[in-house]
Each structure stands twice: as structure tokens, then as C-alpha cells.
Length: 131
Ligand SMILES: [Zn+2]
Ligand SMILES: [Zn+2]
Image 1 (cartoon, protein in one colour):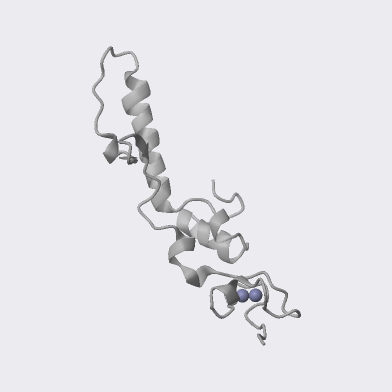
Image 2 (cartoon, rainbow, N blue to C red):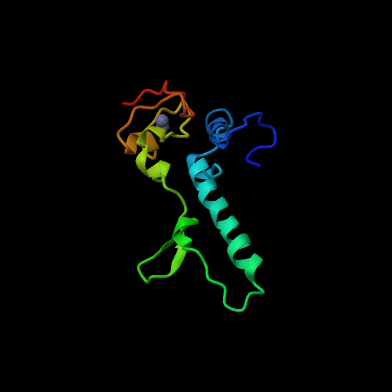
């Protein structure tokens, strides 16, 4: 589902593979196991609580809060996407740049802007010279 060429059996392993070996951007890899769990809960809820009972005149529903939904400020039910923080927001260490090694890292370099050293994740391979 996440990558048809992957041999990973866990979604988080498949994500790691896409990020580290296949060079996908952190914001562009499929959802985490935690997000998949919430999505699965919502799918189960819709199937068992809504569609399965659609012929009942006044069905009583169990609390959507236990099934991947939460109330927003306007008290409307909205999807509870994940119990995890957004990776790109909480993991500065995952920043990587696309600078070419021969040009060096300067100007628009993402690592430089975040005041981090380049790593093996960067296109420059962390071998850049900054002057
Ligand atoms: Zn750079
Ligand atoms: Zn870098």
C-alpha cells in the first residue's frame, strides 16, 4: 500500500525506507502507523455505526470520540488525524538541503537557515564548505 516494491511489513518501516533510501521529502511520505490507526477507526465507525445501521429509524451512535474523531472549536466533529506531532515541526534534525556539493551551502540552503550542520541526508552529503 505504501510502496509496492518494498519488502517492509510495518508501515513505519516502509516510511523509513522511502525517506532514507528513496529520498522522499518528510512531508511527502505516507501517514504514520498512528495516523493509519485513526483512519482505520474512522472507517470502522462509518461501516459499523452509520452504513450498517442506515435502515434503523433512529439509531443511537456510540461516541465518535473513541473512533478517530474529535470536536473542534465550533463543537463540530472533525477527524482526529494522529496522536503524534507533525514530524517536520518537531524534528529539526530531519531538515536536509538540496545544494550541490561543488557550489557549497549558502544563500537559500535550508540547513543554513535553520542554523544546522549539513548531514548525509543533504544532497551535498554533509561535505559542504560554508564560508
Ligand atoms: Zn545546503
Ligand atoms: Zn544541508
